[in-house]
Image 1 (tube, rainbow, N blue to C red):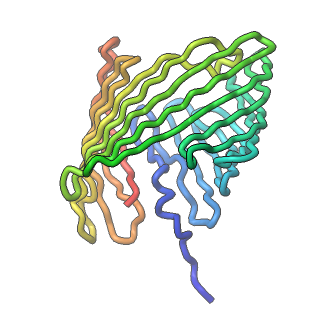
Image 2: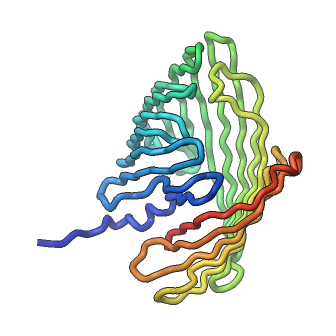
Image 3: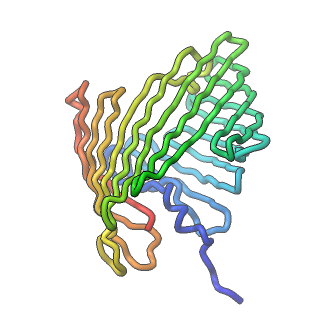
Length: 287
């Protein structure tokens, strides 16, 4: 009789786990994976003004969630394969929208382009609106020596025939990753969003937004207990005129699937200097 074994992909699941430890965001963890064959995750965060708790699961293209997430009660069941029939049901509280959708997705250009068409009905506040959603997304990458580059784009259109409203938007992301030396890497990205029109459901509304981010990370390597990662991160929200600079120091230990450490940074608000603040937190990164 064999003993207990971790799922083969268990360690990689920690990539989307978020540890929370700060005076402004609260304390706890989001999307902590359980050591089960099915990708089941727990969330519990005690924020200064509310408590988040819930469970979510991913089974192939089927996802489910129930609980309170970012102070909004939510129950969701969604089937979203890369291609084929799509459907989703989301019920939310505290003024957030609820929706039910049915659609179909197809892939073109050897999977580099995805076309999604949905019909559905959504409710928020006193408004109930049938709607259609058309979305085209694609990606292109190229390797230039030791530099990996990529371009991602998504064009979408929401139409609300009963209310006579529609909104179109376009998202683009430019990204690069460069290996500067053994253990030393640079990541940078820039995001642009353009939007025009109006929506009948406020949660669906998008507006102009652009932001940039970069990080420089060094992994010393080696085995046993020690420093696993030293990283500097910078970000700029050009729309809100907010800049951030953070430094992370993470430790590793044999047998532990993640590196854990501390993070310290500063946040500048160009339009409201009184909101400038130091940021302290817990940093977690997969091995």
